[in-house]
Length: 90
Length: 367
Image (cartoon, rainbow over all chains, first blue to last red; front, side, top):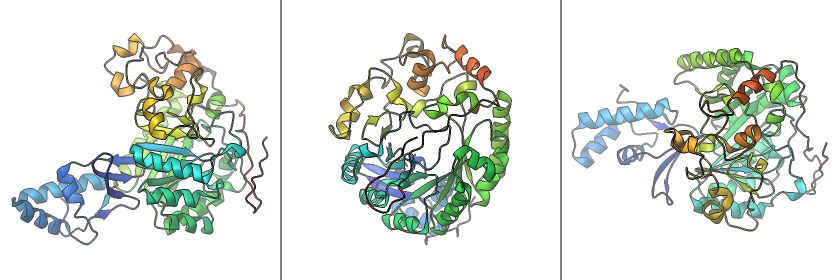
C-alpha cells in the first residue's frame, strides 16, 4: 500500500473539473476520460500537491465521521489505481 | 465526447498511410478563425470535453494559438496532433501561452533515413527530436506516436525504447489503418501475420517492463481479426470530425460513403447536426443493422464494425464489416493479406505546400 506521507498530485496534462453538461466532475487526460464516482470525486477534490495521503484520509474521516482505517484503505486503493493509469503522481 | 478538428489538409509530410481523403481539401476553402471559434462554442455546449487539433498539419494554421486559447477559455481539453516539424521555440511559446494541455508528436521510424523515406520530408526526423525536447522543456506531457507497417514493424522494440528515452509518458504503437491514402497503399503497408504477432509480443513484453513508467497504447490492423473493431466507439456515439472546409463527419473516412449528405457547420449548428442530421442518425445504434449483426450478442460491443470498411471492401456501407468472421465477405481480408507485397510501390500522399511567405495570403501548390 502506498505510504501515508506520499503527496499525490495530478499528472502532467491532467485536468479535473466540473462538467455542466453532464452535471458531474470529470478527469481529462490525453486520450482518456474518466467520470469518477462520488467517493472518488471527494478524494480527488483534496489533491492539491501539498496534502499527503494521510492528511487526505484524516480530512475525510473527520468530515464523514467514519473509521480512519477504512478511509485510508479506500484512498490508497483509488490513488494507486489512478497512478497506474497515469492520472495521478505519487 | 471528443471533437477531431481537422484544421487543414496542408502538411509538409507525405506519409503513404495518411488517413486524409485522396481528395485533399483546398486551402482556399478552409474555415476561418471566426468559424472555428463558433464551432468550439457549439462543441462546448454540446458536451464535448476534448478537442484534437489535427489535419494535415495543424501547425500550418497560423491561427492555431488563437484557436487553442479560445478552446481553453471554454475549458475544453486541448490536444494537438502534430508532426512537430513546425514546432519552433516561438511556436511552442505561443501554444503554451494559449494554454495547450497536450501535444502528440508523430515519428515515422527510429532511423532517420527510413523515417524520411516514409515521411518524404528531408530533415524531418531531426526536427521531431527537437520538438520532443521542447515539449518536455515546456512541462507538457509527451505522447509519441509511431504508425506501424511492414517497413518498420521489425523496429517496434527500438521505437518503444526511443519513446521512453525521449521522456514520453505515453507512446502509441499504432498499426496503419486502411483509409484514405492508407487504403490506397495497403498492398505496400500491410504486414504479415507473423510480423503482427511478433510486434504484439514485443508490446506485451514492454508493457510488463515499463509498467508505471510509460503507458503503451497499441492498435492492431483488423485484417487478421475474427471480430471487427468498435469503430469510433460506434457511429455517431461519442465522436465528431470536422473537415477543413467545415463538413461534419462521424469519422474521417465517412465521405467515401455514397448517398449521404454531410452537413456543414456553415449552415447548421453542431448540436443540430449531432442530434438531427440524417448523416449522424443513419448508422447510429442498432436499428440499421443487418439481421446478422442485430442478432449478435456483440452488437453493442463492436457496433457492427466499420461502415467505411464495409463499403470499401464489400461494396455496401450497411453490411456487416468483412473483418468479422461471421461476415460472408470475410474472405476479402485474407485476400488483401495475400495481395500485400514487400516490394509494392507507394503512392505518396498528395502534397499541399505549407506557405513560406510571411503575409497572410495563402499560397498553395498542389501536386
